[in-house]
Figure 1 (cartoon, rainbow, N blue to C red):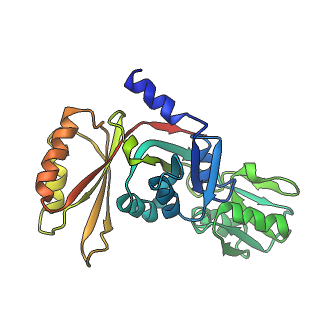
Figure 2: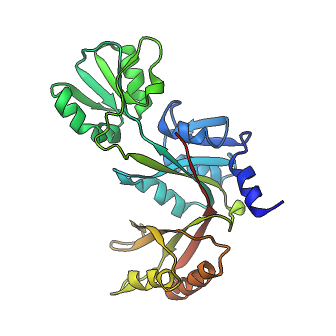
Figure 3: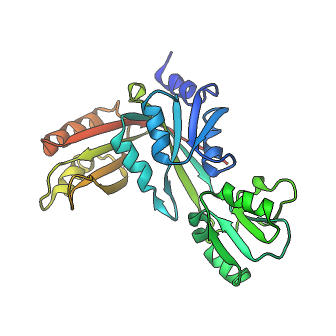
Length: 282
């Protein structure tokens, strides 16, 4: 079986037990549906990654980055803390709709990020409506289903029963997308794919350190698609770096760059999370 074919089979095996953020109907659920039909839910991103690391689930799906809100810190920290592999990336557009039982309401309930992404629309059309932050977009839909004075912001597919869509695509920016990582047990890490992710902990700090860590990629014409720093938790001012590149681990240039970085970090460490391909899900 060829490597490329194996990656496709692994990515689209709908029988795998998969865990993601709940409740059902969330954007995380929509992304996880591209991986498996057997999807369970947990309350935190850390729980999702930990359950995959323990072997309780074969796959986990966690948000990594939104084109407006930026990186998802909890997911990045979990990837650094637990031994897992990244075997796929899912990109899904965010289509926020205003959902309610009635055209008039006094409260709009949704996840804080969804409320922030629709601020301009709400300011213009519903300036007097109270904005209520809840744990997920689905939780907002549940509020709206139980109270005709509450509207929700969520994907339009969530409008069921007495709920109806009052307006679609109400987000302030049309190009609103979220990236999700598909995580698997660490022993399933692949070197095949068009992108790769690493976590680097230099365990030191001096002028020009970050430049030294990035130069091995630049010198080999490897495009950096994301660089993010997160506190290591060891001491103030100490950081872990998350790096995404447009190259596979199977490539000699990537292997050479990583070998050079490992020399640079010395007593620190480099964790290759794996190589993977991207799937876009509507």
